Image (cartoon, helix red, strand yellow):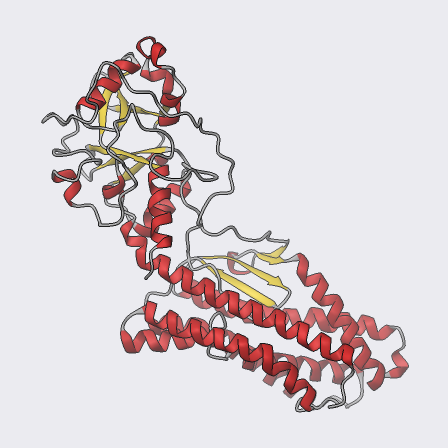
Length: 479
Protein backbone atom coordinates (compact mmCIF):
# COMPACT_ATOMS: atom_id res chain seq x y z
CA UNK A 1 0.00 0.00 0.00
CA UNK A 2 1.29 3.38 -0.91
CA UNK A 3 0.72 6.32 1.40
CA UNK A 4 2.64 9.35 0.17
CA UNK A 5 2.60 11.07 3.50
CA UNK A 6 5.06 13.95 3.28
CA UNK A 7 3.51 16.71 1.21
CA UNK A 8 5.48 19.34 3.02
CA UNK A 9 3.26 19.57 6.01
CA UNK A 10 4.51 21.39 9.03
CA UNK A 11 4.71 19.61 12.31
CA UNK A 12 2.17 20.45 14.89
CA UNK A 13 4.73 20.83 17.62
CA UNK A 14 8.34 20.26 18.59
CA UNK A 15 9.76 17.33 20.48
CA UNK A 16 12.52 19.45 22.00
CA UNK A 17 12.24 20.13 25.73
CA UNK A 18 11.40 23.66 26.71
CA UNK A 19 14.16 25.52 28.49
CA UNK A 20 12.60 28.95 28.92
CA UNK A 21 12.02 30.36 32.41
CA UNK A 22 8.37 30.24 33.43
CA UNK A 23 8.25 33.38 35.59
CA UNK A 24 6.55 36.43 34.04
CA UNK A 25 8.50 39.61 33.51
CA UNK A 26 7.82 42.15 36.22
CA UNK A 27 6.62 45.63 35.24
CA UNK A 28 9.04 48.49 34.77
CA UNK A 29 8.36 51.05 37.53
CA UNK A 30 9.77 53.81 35.33
CA UNK A 31 6.76 53.55 33.06
CA UNK A 32 3.40 53.36 34.85
CA UNK A 33 1.58 53.30 31.47
CA UNK A 34 3.53 50.73 29.45
CA UNK A 35 0.88 50.46 26.77
CA UNK A 36 0.93 54.21 25.92
CA UNK A 37 1.98 54.86 22.38
CA UNK A 38 3.88 57.82 20.97
CA UNK A 39 4.18 59.16 17.45
CA UNK A 40 7.82 58.15 17.39
CA UNK A 41 8.56 55.02 15.38
CA UNK A 42 12.29 54.27 15.40
CA UNK A 43 12.08 51.82 12.49
CA UNK A 44 9.72 53.68 10.22
CA UNK A 45 6.77 51.34 10.97
CA UNK A 46 4.32 54.07 11.80
CA UNK A 47 1.09 53.57 13.67
CA UNK A 48 0.07 51.33 16.47
CA UNK A 49 2.05 48.46 17.92
CA UNK A 50 1.14 44.88 17.18
CA UNK A 51 -0.94 44.89 20.35
CA UNK A 52 -3.07 47.77 19.18
CA UNK A 53 -6.01 47.23 16.85
CA UNK A 54 -5.59 50.53 15.06
CA UNK A 55 -2.83 52.15 13.02
CA UNK A 56 -1.02 51.33 9.83
CA UNK A 57 1.06 48.50 11.20
CA UNK A 58 -2.03 46.56 12.14
CA UNK A 59 -4.11 47.13 9.03
CA UNK A 60 -2.39 44.54 6.88
CA UNK A 61 -2.72 41.70 9.35
CA UNK A 62 -4.69 38.71 8.21
CA UNK A 63 -7.75 38.15 10.43
CA UNK A 64 -7.19 35.25 12.75
CA UNK A 65 -3.42 35.29 12.43
CA UNK A 66 -2.85 37.41 15.51
CA UNK A 67 0.01 35.82 17.45
CA UNK A 68 -1.86 36.17 20.71
CA UNK A 69 -0.76 39.58 21.91
CA UNK A 70 -2.82 40.77 24.80
CA UNK A 71 -2.11 44.49 25.12
CA UNK A 72 0.97 43.94 27.26
CA UNK A 73 4.22 45.82 26.97
CA UNK A 74 7.57 44.14 26.57
CA UNK A 75 8.16 44.48 30.28
CA UNK A 76 4.93 42.66 31.06
CA UNK A 77 5.28 39.88 28.48
CA UNK A 78 6.48 36.38 29.20
CA UNK A 79 7.31 33.38 27.11
CA UNK A 80 3.94 32.11 26.07
CA UNK A 81 1.77 35.14 26.89
CA UNK A 82 -1.92 34.75 26.42
CA UNK A 83 -1.86 31.04 25.61
CA UNK A 84 -1.29 27.75 27.29
CA UNK A 85 2.38 26.86 27.54
CA UNK A 86 3.28 23.81 25.52
CA UNK A 87 6.19 21.50 25.18
CA UNK A 88 8.84 22.97 22.93
CA UNK A 89 7.35 26.50 22.85
CA UNK A 90 9.41 29.14 21.14
CA UNK A 91 10.56 26.74 18.44
CA UNK A 92 9.41 27.05 14.82
CA UNK A 93 6.40 24.76 14.20
CA UNK A 94 7.44 21.43 12.79
CA UNK A 95 5.64 18.83 10.67
CA UNK A 96 4.16 15.87 12.57
CA UNK A 97 6.88 13.81 14.11
CA UNK A 98 7.80 11.06 11.74
CA UNK A 99 8.64 7.49 12.80
CA UNK A 100 12.20 6.26 13.00
CA UNK A 101 13.71 5.78 9.58
CA UNK A 102 14.99 2.25 10.19
CA UNK A 103 17.90 0.79 8.23
CA UNK A 104 19.25 2.88 5.35
CA UNK A 105 19.44 0.67 2.26
CA UNK A 106 20.59 3.20 -0.33
CA UNK A 107 19.86 6.49 -2.08
CA UNK A 108 18.43 5.90 -5.57
CA UNK A 109 17.95 9.22 -7.36
CA UNK A 110 19.37 10.87 -4.21
CA UNK A 111 16.39 9.81 -2.07
CA UNK A 112 17.18 7.71 1.03
CA UNK A 113 15.42 4.34 1.22
CA UNK A 114 14.81 2.93 4.70
CA UNK A 115 13.57 -0.45 5.86
CA UNK A 116 11.47 -0.02 9.00
CA UNK A 117 11.80 -2.57 11.83
CA UNK A 118 8.20 -3.65 11.15
CA UNK A 119 9.34 -5.01 7.77
CA UNK A 120 11.19 -7.85 9.48
CA UNK A 121 7.97 -8.88 11.18
CA UNK A 122 6.01 -9.03 7.93
CA UNK A 123 8.97 -10.76 6.18
CA UNK A 124 8.86 -13.46 8.85
CA UNK A 125 5.08 -13.73 8.43
CA UNK A 126 5.35 -14.05 4.62
CA UNK A 127 8.11 -16.64 5.01
CA UNK A 128 5.98 -18.73 7.34
CA UNK A 129 2.75 -18.50 5.28
CA UNK A 130 4.38 -18.98 1.87
CA UNK A 131 6.51 -21.78 3.28
CA UNK A 132 3.35 -23.61 4.31
CA UNK A 133 1.99 -23.27 0.78
CA UNK A 134 5.27 -24.52 -0.73
CA UNK A 135 5.08 -27.60 1.47
CA UNK A 136 1.88 -28.57 -0.33
CA UNK A 137 3.17 -27.80 -3.82
CA UNK A 138 6.82 -28.87 -3.46
CA UNK A 139 7.05 -31.18 -0.45
CA UNK A 140 10.45 -32.44 -1.57
CA UNK A 141 12.03 -29.10 -0.58
CA UNK A 142 11.77 -29.88 3.11
CA UNK A 143 13.24 -27.14 5.30
CA UNK A 144 14.63 -25.36 2.22
CA UNK A 145 11.10 -24.13 1.54
CA UNK A 146 11.61 -21.41 4.15
CA UNK A 147 14.71 -20.13 2.38
CA UNK A 148 12.70 -19.97 -0.87
CA UNK A 149 9.89 -18.19 1.03
CA UNK A 150 12.32 -15.64 2.42
CA UNK A 151 13.57 -14.97 -1.11
CA UNK A 152 9.96 -14.42 -2.18
CA UNK A 153 9.43 -11.92 0.69
CA UNK A 154 12.52 -9.94 -0.35
CA UNK A 155 11.54 -10.04 -4.04
CA UNK A 156 8.00 -8.91 -3.25
CA UNK A 157 9.24 -5.88 -1.31
CA UNK A 158 11.69 -5.14 -4.11
CA UNK A 159 8.58 -4.84 -6.28
CA UNK A 160 7.04 -2.51 -3.70
CA UNK A 161 10.21 -0.42 -3.84
CA UNK A 162 9.85 -0.15 -7.64
CA UNK A 163 6.26 1.03 -7.06
CA UNK A 164 7.50 3.73 -4.70
CA UNK A 165 10.37 4.72 -6.98
CA UNK A 166 7.79 5.41 -9.67
CA UNK A 167 6.18 7.98 -7.37
CA UNK A 168 9.60 9.38 -6.52
CA UNK A 169 10.73 9.80 -10.14
CA UNK A 170 7.45 11.50 -11.03
CA UNK A 171 7.75 13.83 -8.02
CA UNK A 172 11.32 14.77 -8.90
CA UNK A 173 10.23 15.32 -12.50
CA UNK A 174 7.70 17.85 -11.21
CA UNK A 175 10.38 19.41 -8.95
CA UNK A 176 8.70 18.18 -5.76
CA UNK A 177 11.25 17.26 -3.07
CA UNK A 178 11.03 13.72 -1.67
CA UNK A 179 12.15 13.32 1.94
CA UNK A 180 12.55 9.54 1.87
CA UNK A 181 11.08 6.17 0.94
CA UNK A 182 10.27 3.77 3.75
CA UNK A 183 9.40 0.07 3.43
CA UNK A 184 7.24 -1.02 6.34
CA UNK A 185 4.62 -3.52 7.51
CA UNK A 186 1.87 -2.88 4.95
CA UNK A 187 3.96 -1.80 1.98
CA UNK A 188 5.85 1.41 1.31
CA UNK A 189 5.63 5.14 1.83
CA UNK A 190 6.99 7.87 -0.45
CA UNK A 191 7.23 11.01 1.65
CA UNK A 192 6.78 13.87 -0.81
CA UNK A 193 7.29 17.20 0.93
CA UNK A 194 5.10 19.45 -1.22
CA UNK A 195 1.76 19.22 -2.93
CA UNK A 196 1.46 18.97 -6.71
CA UNK A 197 0.62 22.33 -8.27
CA UNK A 198 -2.12 21.08 -10.60
CA UNK A 199 -4.71 18.29 -10.52
CA UNK A 200 -3.17 16.80 -13.65
CA UNK A 201 0.20 16.42 -11.97
CA UNK A 202 -1.47 15.04 -8.85
CA UNK A 203 -3.23 12.39 -10.96
CA UNK A 204 -0.01 11.38 -12.74
CA UNK A 205 1.93 11.33 -9.50
CA UNK A 206 -0.59 8.90 -7.98
CA UNK A 207 -1.17 6.75 -11.07
CA UNK A 208 2.44 5.87 -11.89
CA UNK A 209 2.76 3.61 -8.81
CA UNK A 210 -0.08 1.19 -9.64
CA UNK A 211 0.93 1.39 -13.30
CA UNK A 212 4.42 0.10 -12.47
CA UNK A 213 2.91 -2.67 -10.34
CA UNK A 214 0.72 -3.71 -13.28
CA UNK A 215 3.75 -3.67 -15.59
CA UNK A 216 5.69 -5.85 -13.14
CA UNK A 217 2.78 -8.29 -12.95
CA UNK A 218 2.80 -8.48 -16.75
CA UNK A 219 6.58 -9.05 -16.86
CA UNK A 220 6.36 -11.85 -14.33
CA UNK A 221 3.53 -13.39 -16.36
CA UNK A 222 5.67 -13.33 -19.51
CA UNK A 223 8.62 -14.77 -17.60
CA UNK A 224 6.35 -17.54 -16.32
CA UNK A 225 5.43 -18.72 -19.83
CA UNK A 226 8.62 -20.73 -20.63
CA UNK A 227 9.00 -22.04 -17.07
CA UNK A 228 7.79 -25.51 -16.21
CA UNK A 229 4.91 -25.49 -13.66
CA UNK A 230 5.48 -27.09 -10.29
CA UNK A 231 9.10 -25.92 -10.04
CA UNK A 232 10.64 -23.41 -7.64
CA UNK A 233 11.05 -20.72 -10.37
CA UNK A 234 7.49 -21.31 -11.53
CA UNK A 235 6.04 -20.96 -8.03
CA UNK A 236 8.09 -17.84 -7.33
CA UNK A 237 7.17 -16.13 -10.60
CA UNK A 238 3.48 -16.99 -10.16
CA UNK A 239 3.53 -15.64 -6.61
CA UNK A 240 5.21 -12.39 -7.66
CA UNK A 241 2.79 -11.97 -10.58
CA UNK A 242 -0.25 -12.38 -8.32
CA UNK A 243 1.14 -10.21 -5.50
CA UNK A 244 1.95 -7.31 -7.83
CA UNK A 245 -1.49 -7.58 -9.40
CA UNK A 246 -3.06 -7.39 -5.93
CA UNK A 247 -0.89 -4.38 -5.02
CA UNK A 248 -1.95 -2.56 -8.19
CA UNK A 249 -5.66 -3.30 -7.79
CA UNK A 250 -5.68 -2.44 -4.09
CA UNK A 251 -3.90 0.86 -4.63
CA UNK A 252 -6.36 1.80 -7.36
CA UNK A 253 -9.27 1.71 -4.89
CA UNK A 254 -10.68 5.28 -4.83
CA UNK A 255 -10.07 6.36 -1.26
CA UNK A 256 -7.33 8.19 0.57
CA UNK A 257 -4.61 7.45 1.54
CA UNK A 258 -4.37 5.00 -1.38
CA UNK A 259 -3.17 6.05 -4.82
CA UNK A 260 -6.70 5.67 -6.17
CA UNK A 261 -7.86 8.14 -3.54
CA UNK A 262 -5.31 10.66 -4.72
CA UNK A 263 -6.49 10.11 -8.27
CA UNK A 264 -10.09 10.70 -7.16
CA UNK A 265 -8.94 13.83 -5.33
CA UNK A 266 -7.30 15.09 -8.52
CA UNK A 267 -10.50 14.50 -10.52
CA UNK A 268 -12.71 16.32 -8.00
CA UNK A 269 -10.09 19.09 -7.75
CA UNK A 270 -10.20 19.49 -11.54
CA UNK A 271 -14.02 19.61 -11.61
CA UNK A 272 -14.52 21.98 -8.66
CA UNK A 273 -11.30 23.99 -8.89
CA UNK A 274 -10.69 23.46 -5.15
CA UNK A 275 -8.11 20.95 -3.89
CA UNK A 276 -9.76 20.95 -0.45
CA UNK A 277 -13.05 19.71 -1.94
CA UNK A 278 -11.18 16.87 -3.64
CA UNK A 279 -9.45 15.94 -0.40
CA UNK A 280 -12.71 15.88 1.57
CA UNK A 281 -14.41 13.68 -1.04
CA UNK A 282 -11.51 11.22 -1.34
CA UNK A 283 -11.00 11.07 2.44
CA UNK A 284 -14.63 10.18 3.13
CA UNK A 285 -14.54 7.56 0.40
CA UNK A 286 -11.40 6.25 2.11
CA UNK A 287 -13.24 5.96 5.41
CA UNK A 288 -16.07 4.09 3.70
CA UNK A 289 -13.44 1.84 2.14
CA UNK A 290 -11.95 1.16 5.59
CA UNK A 291 -15.33 0.02 6.89
CA UNK A 292 -15.81 -2.14 3.80
CA UNK A 293 -12.45 -3.83 4.38
CA UNK A 294 -13.23 -4.38 8.05
CA UNK A 295 -16.53 -6.13 7.30
CA UNK A 296 -16.10 -7.43 3.78
CA UNK A 297 -12.64 -8.99 3.77
CA UNK A 298 -13.39 -11.71 6.35
CA UNK A 299 -16.71 -12.46 4.61
CA UNK A 300 -14.96 -12.86 1.24
CA UNK A 301 -12.44 -15.25 2.78
CA UNK A 302 -15.27 -17.33 4.27
CA UNK A 303 -17.11 -17.42 0.96
CA UNK A 304 -14.23 -19.18 -0.76
CA UNK A 305 -14.20 -16.54 -3.49
CA UNK A 306 -10.39 -16.34 -3.36
CA UNK A 307 -10.10 -20.04 -4.10
CA UNK A 308 -9.76 -21.21 -0.51
CA UNK A 309 -11.88 -23.64 1.48
CA UNK A 310 -15.15 -22.11 2.64
CA UNK A 311 -14.99 -24.32 5.78
CA UNK A 312 -12.47 -22.26 7.71
CA UNK A 313 -11.34 -22.98 11.27
CA UNK A 314 -11.96 -20.61 14.16
CA UNK A 315 -8.26 -19.71 14.28
CA UNK A 316 -8.33 -18.70 10.61
CA UNK A 317 -11.43 -16.62 11.29
CA UNK A 318 -9.67 -14.72 14.08
CA UNK A 319 -6.60 -14.19 11.89
CA UNK A 320 -8.68 -12.85 9.01
CA UNK A 321 -10.58 -10.50 11.31
CA UNK A 322 -7.35 -9.23 12.89
CA UNK A 323 -5.70 -8.54 9.54
CA UNK A 324 -8.84 -6.82 8.25
CA UNK A 325 -8.98 -4.65 11.39
CA UNK A 326 -5.33 -3.60 11.04
CA UNK A 327 -5.73 -2.77 7.37
CA UNK A 328 -8.98 -0.88 7.98
CA UNK A 329 -7.36 1.10 10.81
CA UNK A 330 -4.46 2.13 8.56
CA UNK A 331 -6.82 3.30 5.81
CA UNK A 332 -9.12 5.15 8.26
CA UNK A 333 -6.19 6.87 9.99
CA UNK A 334 -4.60 7.83 6.68
CA UNK A 335 -7.86 9.35 5.46
CA UNK A 336 -8.17 11.38 8.66
CA UNK A 337 -4.58 12.60 8.40
CA UNK A 338 -5.22 13.68 4.82
CA UNK A 339 -8.17 15.78 5.98
CA UNK A 340 -6.15 17.35 8.76
CA UNK A 341 -3.23 18.23 6.46
CA UNK A 342 -5.57 19.67 3.83
CA UNK A 343 -7.20 21.87 6.45
CA UNK A 344 -3.80 23.09 7.55
CA UNK A 345 -2.79 23.91 3.96
CA UNK A 346 -5.93 26.03 3.66
CA UNK A 347 -4.87 28.17 6.60
CA UNK A 348 -1.09 28.25 6.06
CA UNK A 349 -1.18 31.50 4.04
CA UNK A 350 -2.43 33.22 7.21
CA UNK A 351 1.00 32.63 8.77
CA UNK A 352 2.61 35.82 7.52
CA UNK A 353 5.84 37.32 8.81
CA UNK A 354 4.43 40.82 8.33
CA UNK A 355 1.32 40.17 10.40
CA UNK A 356 3.08 38.26 13.18
CA UNK A 357 6.05 40.58 13.65
CA UNK A 358 6.45 42.57 16.85
CA UNK A 359 7.44 46.21 16.70
CA UNK A 360 11.04 46.72 17.86
CA UNK A 361 13.13 49.63 19.10
CA UNK A 362 16.89 50.00 18.51
CA UNK A 363 19.20 50.27 21.53
CA UNK A 364 22.97 50.51 21.69
CA UNK A 365 25.06 47.80 23.31
CA UNK A 366 25.70 49.58 26.61
CA UNK A 367 22.06 50.63 27.17
CA UNK A 368 20.79 49.48 30.59
CA UNK A 369 17.93 47.03 30.39
CA UNK A 370 15.61 49.28 32.41
CA UNK A 371 16.19 52.16 29.98
CA UNK A 372 15.69 49.89 26.98
CA UNK A 373 12.40 48.65 28.40
CA UNK A 374 11.28 52.22 29.08
CA UNK A 375 11.91 53.17 25.45
CA UNK A 376 10.11 50.05 24.20
CA UNK A 377 7.08 50.73 26.37
CA UNK A 378 6.97 54.37 25.32
CA UNK A 379 6.95 53.29 21.66
CA UNK A 380 4.43 50.51 22.21
CA UNK A 381 7.04 47.96 21.13
CA UNK A 382 7.62 44.42 22.33
CA UNK A 383 11.14 43.71 21.07
CA UNK A 384 14.65 45.13 21.34
CA UNK A 385 17.29 45.21 18.61
CA UNK A 386 20.88 45.98 19.62
CA UNK A 387 22.56 48.24 17.05
CA UNK A 388 25.96 49.85 16.64
CA UNK A 389 26.64 53.57 16.42
CA UNK A 390 25.60 53.59 12.74
CA UNK A 391 22.29 51.87 13.46
CA UNK A 392 23.33 48.51 11.99
CA UNK A 393 21.59 45.66 13.83
CA UNK A 394 24.00 43.43 15.71
CA UNK A 395 21.90 41.20 17.94
CA UNK A 396 18.43 40.57 19.34
CA UNK A 397 17.61 40.77 23.02
CA UNK A 398 16.05 37.46 23.96
CA UNK A 399 12.68 37.68 25.62
CA UNK A 400 13.51 34.68 27.79
CA UNK A 401 16.64 36.48 29.04
CA UNK A 402 14.59 39.53 30.06
CA UNK A 403 12.34 37.25 32.10
CA UNK A 404 15.31 36.02 34.12
CA UNK A 405 16.56 39.48 35.20
CA UNK A 406 15.01 40.70 38.50
CA UNK A 407 13.58 44.20 38.40
CA UNK A 408 16.07 45.66 40.87
CA UNK A 409 19.03 44.53 38.70
CA UNK A 410 17.73 45.90 35.40
CA UNK A 411 19.41 49.33 35.72
CA UNK A 412 22.78 47.57 36.09
CA UNK A 413 22.47 45.01 33.27
CA UNK A 414 23.41 46.04 29.72
CA UNK A 415 21.22 44.76 26.90
CA UNK A 416 24.25 43.32 25.11
CA UNK A 417 24.59 40.71 27.83
CA UNK A 418 21.09 39.41 27.08
CA UNK A 419 21.33 39.46 23.30
CA UNK A 420 21.90 36.78 20.68
CA UNK A 421 24.06 37.62 17.68
CA UNK A 422 22.13 37.87 14.43
CA UNK A 423 23.15 35.18 11.99
CA UNK A 424 22.20 35.10 8.32
CA UNK A 425 19.47 32.56 9.04
CA UNK A 426 17.92 34.92 11.61
CA UNK A 427 17.27 37.61 8.99
CA UNK A 428 13.91 36.98 7.33
CA UNK A 429 11.89 38.95 4.82
CA UNK A 430 8.65 40.62 5.88
CA UNK A 431 7.08 39.19 2.70
CA UNK A 432 7.43 35.56 3.75
CA UNK A 433 4.28 33.59 4.53
CA UNK A 434 2.87 30.07 4.68
CA UNK A 435 5.13 27.11 3.99
CA UNK A 436 7.93 29.37 2.79
CA UNK A 437 7.99 31.11 6.18
CA UNK A 438 7.94 27.83 8.11
CA UNK A 439 10.69 26.34 5.93
CA UNK A 440 12.84 29.42 6.52
CA UNK A 441 12.40 29.24 10.30
CA UNK A 442 13.04 25.50 10.41
CA UNK A 443 16.26 25.95 8.45
CA UNK A 444 17.69 28.18 11.23
CA UNK A 445 16.00 27.40 14.57
CA UNK A 446 15.97 30.38 16.96
CA UNK A 447 13.66 32.05 19.43
CA UNK A 448 13.64 35.45 17.68
CA UNK A 449 14.27 36.61 14.12
CA UNK A 450 15.03 40.02 12.64
CA UNK A 451 12.38 40.90 10.04
CA UNK A 452 13.53 43.16 7.22
CA UNK A 453 11.78 45.04 4.44
CA UNK A 454 12.91 44.45 0.86
CA UNK A 455 14.83 47.72 1.12
CA UNK A 456 16.84 46.35 4.07
CA UNK A 457 15.09 48.48 6.69
CA UNK A 458 14.16 46.86 9.99
CA UNK A 459 10.48 45.96 10.16
CA UNK A 460 10.55 44.34 13.60
CA UNK A 461 11.24 41.10 15.42
CA UNK A 462 9.45 37.82 14.83
CA UNK A 463 9.09 35.53 17.85
CA UNK A 464 8.97 31.80 17.18
CA UNK A 465 6.47 31.53 20.04
CA UNK A 466 4.09 33.86 18.17
CA UNK A 467 4.39 31.73 15.03
CA UNK A 468 3.69 28.60 17.05
CA UNK A 469 0.55 30.10 18.58
CA UNK A 470 -0.72 31.19 15.16
CA UNK A 471 0.08 27.72 13.82
CA UNK A 472 -1.97 26.06 16.57
CA UNK A 473 -4.89 28.39 15.84
CA UNK A 474 -4.71 27.50 12.15
CA UNK A 475 -4.79 23.81 13.02
CA UNK A 476 -7.83 24.29 15.27
CA UNK A 477 -9.97 26.26 12.82
CA UNK A 478 -12.28 24.30 10.51
CA UNK A 479 -11.70 24.58 6.79
